[in-house]
Length: 151
View: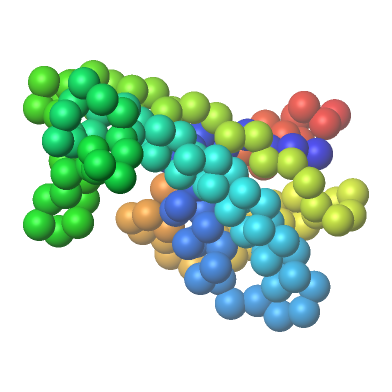
């Protein structure tokens, strides 16, 4: 089974899952799900790097990023975006974050079902707010849709 999760939920979902205290098989199932989510996160990070290279400010904005034409950074280390292309960058980044990552795998048939069950049990017994609530919502919706598609 695979789940579909918007890119914007990847980091909150990973953080949420890693914060849950589990034992034994549940901990293993969670760790394997985090590993699968991390693969999708790596793809997202690669796409974000491409956007930064495309829209980032450099010595000569008419030439690609190279050692001789590096990206310009803010004082806090973030890459500066070309002011003339800021709106275009923000639009492209928003689209990227709304795109859906397909998370598939697991080492046994019911892996995603097991993780869905432990996430729902955790949420039933704990108050969630902020990013944890958002992460739970994203995961719960993804698991629910995957179960419907499976049947």
